[in-house]
Image (cartoon, rainbow over all chains, first blue to last red; front, side, top):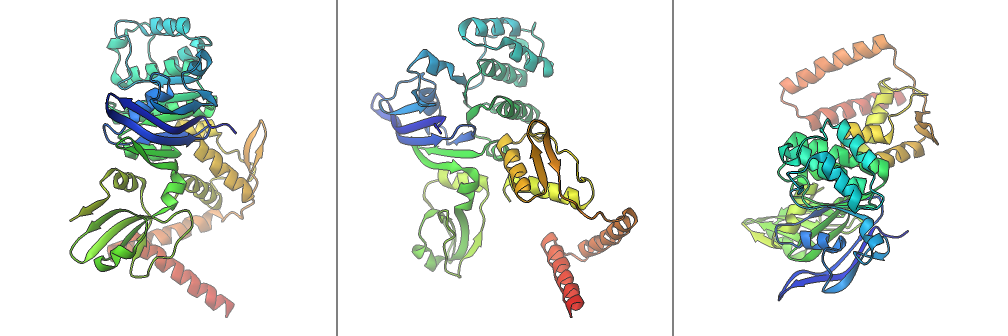
Length: 286
Length: 119
């Protein structure tokens, strides 16, 4: 089966600085991927490369087998909602839909109108007069009306209140169920991701730290707690927190259960803790 | 516990407690996704697991139906047992037992009773 998204040795340089380097990621069709990383990690750069808004400095990125942004067909396969879901604030929702239809072949305006009606968003209102949550929903409806096979969302949940976040996620999940669209979304709100996403890509300082199914990733890590003098013998440490005699380690054990010396107490790790460990510097001393 | 196993367990418990019966239709993936705001792949995976366990059957174009037969507890017994267990759990909480200890104690008593029965 063709991957929805495949990046190989992807790199993007702005002047002398590399925003992204040696990035290899594979996303199976039908998955919902959380792209996580601190500011400046390269998330937006990666998304812009996937959408064809940037041409890579090195390596390549393919969307459903075709060069991203290479052709009009490739562009039509990808829907993109940029940060803060920008809309033309002076235009009404109906005008935005008409524009979407004029600019995109195969734009399903009826579908968008149906979705917006279900959410009680009036078509006659100007985009600037809508609430933040409603603007986010309009952006999503516009992107989905394009009937993309891959939907790329840059920080879709930022600046939304909890109810709007839930409503947005619900619309998104319904779209995944109905249209079988693959989703790549970046977010800082880790707690909201676990139910919604099934894959995880962690970016830090322009490189990929982690890429896999959330379930597999969680199963391949353990929290170990034990005496500090034994800590040097443990392989695969992602993050270590040492106090005078005691150490807490987060280790990558791999898919197979590995035997750890019995002085260590083992615990399963939660998604938030795991992500934070990968975002922090390798070793922290307390 | 992975989210899909949580769903599997909810269905199993609903069956045991009589909220679901043989022949009942499970909500469609779309319905579950719309209510719970979870990833549809999670629901599909949970339903597949239940199908493998012989609890449900997916009928193409119709939906997913409960096929497992569970001996239902008589309503009177159910209410009586639930009330006495409620009293016991409150008692345990008042004595300062946490959830894990309560579960461990129930498992231990069940094992003892089973061992007595076998003896």
